[in-house]
Amino acid sequence: MRSSDTDMLVDKSETVILINDLYKSFEDLEVLDGIDLKLHKRENLTVLGRSGSGKSVLLKIIVGLLRPDKGEVFVLGKNVERLSTYELNSLRLRIGFSFQSSALYDSMNVYQNLAFPLTMNIKGLARKEVQDSVEEVLGAVALSDKIYQMPAELSGGQRKRIGIARALITKPEIMLYDEPTSGLDPITSVEIIDLINEVQRRYNTSSIIITHDLTCAKNAGNRIAMLAEGRFLRVGNFDEVFASEDERIRGFYNYNFIQ
Amino acid sequence: MNESGKKRYLFTRNVDAFLTDIHHGFKFTIQFFREVVRKPFYFRETVNQCFEIGIRSLGLITITGFIVGFVFVKQSRPSLESFGATSWLPSLMGIASVRALGPLVTALIAAGKVGSGIGAELGSMKVTEQIDAMEVSAINPFKYLVVTRVVASTVGIFMLALYCDAVTLLGSYMNINSVEGISMQSFLHNAFSSISFLDLFTNIIKAVTYGFTIGIVGCYKGFNATQGTRGVGMAANQAVVLSIFLIFLEEFIIVQIVNWIRYL
Image 1 (tube, rainbow over the protein chains, first blue to last red):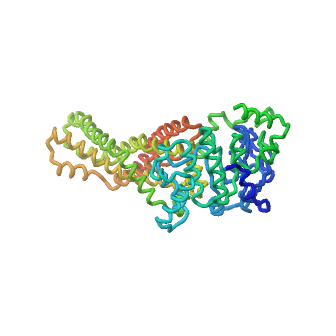
Image 2 (image 1 turned 45 degrees about the vertical axis):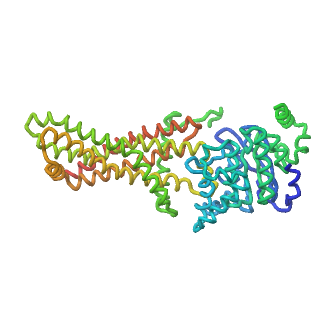
Image 3 (image 1 turned 180 degrees about the horizontal axis):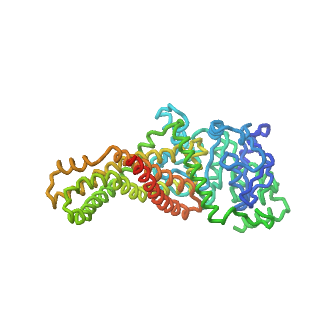
């Protein structure tokens, strides 16, 4: 499935993430330098950029893991900076986060990894309900047979899938993917891209996908935002972004093409 | 930063880093006391951790405590023999094991086994983003990982210290029995009749303090690990070194306070 197949799902009248004039630096290193961004409902937005360009920092600010130096981030209508711990946690349950390293809990098997966010946040859930939810998301990522395996026994692609399944277990409205295809072979990458599009269609999620992989950007994103030097150089669909004559964008395109 | 863009330090880079570390450690400890009384309480995880800590150190503490008791008697006998006081060996061992040996031996073993284990485990979770994953899943990682481990190490090491007291006495009894032929009943009577309430109280205070120190230092170092796998090793190493240093510092302070109370 290509991202163009899901373009009709996007509801441009509704914004789920709104970022205004966002700045973030670490000591003397300026990472984000006045970012503005809108994510529409049921849209997959790919943020493309080189390593160290601040893509992951952007995701961590959206989910409240990092605080911006300046600017506002509204997620599902709520200003992330102004939320109490309780409100922030309630909001986080509506956001799924798939980590670059998958971040599966080493000491737990797949079932426990998936059940953990549910059992820790929703009191009084019957064992059957937890089991059903785990089986459903495992089915969605096509890894039902791995339910009792330990993370160390899984391949890189399987770990990514389980990471996505764990993010989906609370039925989030927004999915944030941090480098979903990094470290994977081309075939597994395509499978993950298909899964991202399938998640968008099946769970009606709006997503931000952080990547430096053009194949992923082209096939998983309804729109692409090209990040460099702390700013978005261009935002639009794949052809619009790469029609640019900006050397940084051309360079990025050519490098990926050669690769 | 100064005008030329160079970072300015209050003292030197290393001294500033050291003082900042102390400040952060202090804040981390205060956060523990804030979180430990707040809901939710993860009893099951705390019990699991207690069990882990106990199992991880039990074998070593059994062997070490027994050897310490046995050797302590062997080393003390010649001195006591010189003025015909070998009958005081059980009393000496009772006092020595309860006042100092039990908690200290337990703490040193646990600093190596438990402290490094906690530092490495949390450090590894930190650098592989597992702690971030917990946070974005609306789970308080400090509460789930730190509070449970610190409580478990405090309780677990306290219980291990009591066990170590008993094993040290057993080791010393084996040696005394083999040379002086004293009965178990007589040994225990002499050993326990010399122990005061203050000695027991000191034992408890020391064990609890050392257990807390090992837990909080291990968690602090692990929770703040950086620099990938190298950081994990550093966290485990620093957890052990700092725990042992603090244990001796606390030993010194507690002994001063207890002696002051004893001679009031």
